[in-house]
Each structure stands twice: as C-alpha cells, then as structure tokens.
Length: 554
Image 1 (cartoon, helix red, strand yellow):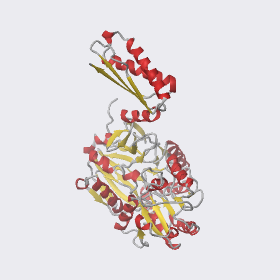
Image 2 (cartoon, rainbow, N blue to C red):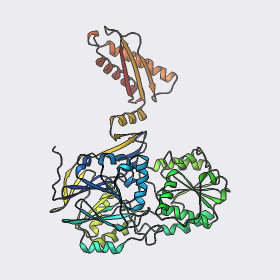
Image 3 (tube, helix red, strand yellow):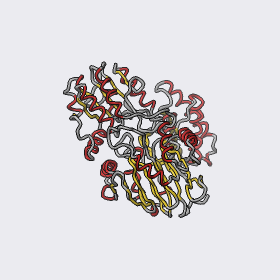
Image 4 (spheres, rainbow, N blue to C red):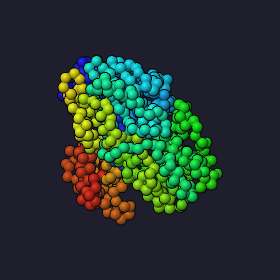
C-alpha cells in the first residue's frame, strides 16, 4: 500500500493518540504542506503490561515528515497532554508553544531529561494570538481542573477549527479566570467549520459542577473526623489543593504535601502567581510532629499507582507517614477507566487496617474537570460548528458524543480512530485514508513498541511461567547424559516440580531420539525439545510457558 501523501490544499485532522482511548493525546492538523501538532501526552499501563508504567503514542508518521512539522502547541498541563514531551521531542525537534503555567512544568521535565537547552520553548500569554506555519492560532481561556486550560482557534483560508482541549463550564472557578465567552462568541460569529472536542463525560447527565462547591463539603467532612486525614487527588489539580488547604484551615488543621509531584505542582503554581495567599503548607516530615487531629495529608496516588505515596502508606512502607485505625483516607478524584483494580487494592489494604475510606460515593469530595451532557449541548448551541469530531474518549464515548452533536443540529459528525485522516476542507468532509499508528511503552529506560516481542513474551511469562532446558550433544549428535529441565512459575516446588521435570526429561529423550543422528542439527534438536516440553506442560497443567532451549555441542 502506497504511503499517504497530503495534498497541500487540504485542511486535515489526524489523531495519532487520544481517540478510541482516554490519554496519550497526539493530534495533527495539516494545511499548506505543513503539519501542526496539538498535545503530546502519556497514559499509564495496567497489569496487562508487566514492568511498564507509561504508555505514549508512536509519532513515527510525523517523525518521517518532521521537516514539515511547524510546531507543537500544548493546550494545558495535564500529563495526558504534555507527559510524552521529554521522551518524544528528540524525534520531532520542533518549537513548542505553551502558556506560562504549562511552560513552567514542561521546562522542568526538559531539565530532568537534559534537553532544556535544545528546545525552543515559546511562552504565549493567555488569550494570545500567534502564527505557526500556515495556521493563525488564538488561545481562548476555558475552565478545567488545572490552571490555564485553552481552546485553540485554528484559522486557515479554507476554514476555522475550534480544538477545545479539556474543559468544563465552571461559573466560579477557584483558580484562574472564567470561560472567555466573549471570545468564543466572536469565533462563533465568524463561523466554525469543525469543533474537535472532549468526550470524557458524554454519558453523564447535567453539569460537572464547580470546584467552589467542594470547600464547604470538605469542611463538613474534616470537622467530623478525630484522627489523621489523608486526601489523595491528581497532583495537577491545583484548585483541589486550594480547596483542601482552605477547608483544613477552617477546622484548625494544617496541610502537609506528601509526594514529589505535589510539591512540584505547588512550586510551579506559585511561580506563576497562583496559591499566593494560602495558609502555610508543612512538609511530610514536619507532619509527624503535629497531633493527629491537627493535620490533613494531601497525598499522591489517587489511581493506585504502586510507587505513589498512598500505595506506600497502604503497605505501611512510607518512610514518614503512617495511618492507623481511626484515621481516614479520602479519594478525591475519578477512577480513570482501567485503574479500578489498582485503586481497589489500595483501598482494601487501608480498610483492612481499620482506616475509613471516603470516596464520591460516601461524600461529595470530587467534581470532574470535563463537560457533562448539558455543558456539551451549551457549547454546541453557542459555537454552531458545521462538523463535530469527538476525541478524548473510548469508541463508546465517541459514538455517544457524535449522537449528541447530531441532536444539537450539527450537520455532520466524523468519528476518528487513531490513524484516521479526516479531510475538513475543501470539498466534502470525511475520512480519506488511514495511516499506521500504535503505542510505545516506556520499559525501564527504553521505549519499545507496545506490541513488541519483548513485552509479548513478558506477558506470557507472567501468565504461563517459564521453562528452561539444556541438552548436551557430542559431535555425532549423541546426547551426553540426561537433559536438564527447570520450571519457574509453572508448578509448586517439591514433588510436583520433580514429577513434571522427570516427565519432561523422558519426553525430551524420546523426541530427540526420534531424530536420526545425521539430522540432529542444533536447530532440529531445539525445535524437538521445545515441542516436547510444551506438550508435557500443556497436558499436565494447561499452561503454555515461555520455553528456552540451550543446545551445547562438545
């Protein structure tokens, strides 16, 4: 199949990540022979990818065209929109545009990766306008759960696209300004060809609610507890940090931040003029000197991440923080799909030690940063786009979002998958091609294809165990002694393992003996031994272990 080649006259939209999934956002726009990238994020692996913590989109398509990549614009500072920058920028080497808060976080990431001096990181003011290649770009301030979320207005001679990024309608935000409806109205009056928008909460009725409403709810919750209180939320939720600190102060408690990412976010917020009037924050070490009823711990790990502070506390393995019977753990965030089991494991460990678990089911401790159905309807009614393109959701979210858009009298909807090339203008709107796309996994310090043989083998090892066989042959192909067989993760040590090893040895001797000595090449023996071991193990245990065969000729 011939490689896709864009027509310079076409305005195109091409997601390489963030469609058919929540996370790993990487969106491309094309016009005039140039490409614009919007966001470059990560997501987090689950138990299906042992040894891997972080996933990110594969940028190979645009990497091959990087001479035509005009720049990368970051909509806001969440990890699923900026987290892949230090890993993938060396493959792209384009200018990066961001507002001050996002730029501060990216600057720290680049510094950690020893890339800061190489990157042209351009700060754009809130509500700023700038040009990237053939695209005239305007930032429009929205509200979300992190400072400085922006919609992008992408103007070209053939049409204007509104790329919403992540947003909600918060009429009274705790941090940052309100939604800039005046700017959005001006864009709507000009005419919007397409709106590319957030689908996360499309199944949720009503509105997400305001962060401002959480503070009195936290005050009520905190006032009824006598032990230590640990609240875990996304580190990037600066408004939640503000709400928790002020609520704790109202009931006479100090707040300690527990976790490096929370301190980093706190420092970046203050660097950009946020959180300047908060009561004093204490360190996790100093929290140990405060009475248990005078402290609230704000802790990383709301998604059950094994290396985050809340997981360590649940395992009673944190070097500074201990929770005990009578204390309370508050999970102040939504469960990202796929993280339910990890979160449940942490909560079960805490509950087993007599620690009360409080989630949104028990008390009002969270509001979403994404638009629910009524907010989506309002945005469509205000912006009146000709075309709706749902992103930032699983296929179930995208289909429902498209249906909602049609109910709002949007003329056309196009549902993208990662790798789908959508022509927006000129002419008919629709899918014109697909390009190869996949995911990358950060495996230790190395990026691998998410479907690489290494990771496939590791999954098989986790679920089926391993078998190792050594066979020694002389120059005539005669086996010298019995083969050595060992298993790991297949059967219990002791009699069960010995019986399986003996059975495997007998089968290996039989299979190798069935090969005429003249034909006992190293490859032929290896294949016969592997078949023998797998046949025995599958018959006895139903497992299909990863089998390694060593053939030694002396």
